[in-house]
Image (cartoon, rainbow, N blue to C red; front, top):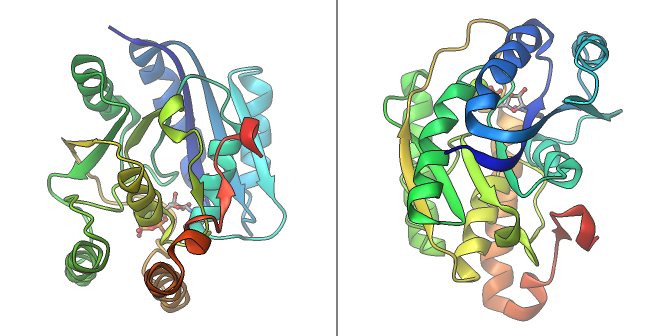
Length: 251
Ligand SMILES: Nc1nc2c(ncn2[C@@H]2O[C@H](COP(=O)(O)OP(=O)(O)O)[C@@H](O)[C@H]2O)c(=O)[nH]1
Ligand SMILES: [Mg+2]
């Protein structure tokens, strides 16, 4: 059974070459996922023609496809944050704008959410299509999140996540960088929410270039990681109140 409503958003940074196919994939897959839906493209200060291509897609698919633009790049978390804020419907989901995940595969998450009534269902990449070095980083990151935050999930950064809107009420996140996903899961867990995990396929990038493991991205994530960890030790209440609400009706 499809969901009643779904807002699906994509963080996009220099993804002009991927956008057409991404939106075509999304519009083909969405009718099976939800009765009412919207697609939100978040252009995170791209320097290529992402905004131009996105504008044309918005015009072509008026009403269903929307665009949120950042004049200046904010980072992966900042792009996701704008997607959460723009989403209007009862369920929210995202995958990446580079087509390394397929929108149709969100059906696995929707099915799990429907069967279990779980408010948060996230994917894990059954076989990750990234260079070996990325797999090593990801393993270290997963272990670090487990040791320092007690976060037990198989794939923190898997960009296939589905949330019931009510699960996000009162949830605030501080990071705007790559640590955003981990921080969100840590805070959901602290809130007592159960997170279910479902295997999803992962595909190699066929256009554009990845920047997810760039030095500045990693440095920022490490800074945010330790800022949260040390903050929780020093002043738990103050640290937990630091950040911004994800839902627009709570800002
Ligand atoms: N790396 C990065 N990705 C961003 C940013 N803003 C949005 N994105 C999007 O986030 C997704 C993941 O980025 P990518 O470079 O493919 O990371 P990777 O898959 O971890 O190698 C893509 O859809 C990007 O377009 C940003 O500032 N940095
Ligand atoms: Mg990618």
